[in-house]
Length: 37
Image (tube, rainbow, N blue to C red):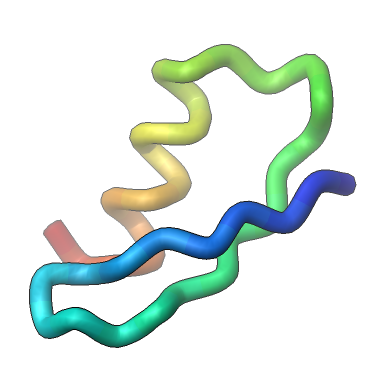
């Protein structure tokens, strides 16, 4: 598992866990699910 830290729209840092073989599209879906966008 890889842990990626991104900022949501409110400026809070959100940690997202994904697999190394995930595509960029998969990562975008995970980010959207975590940040509520």
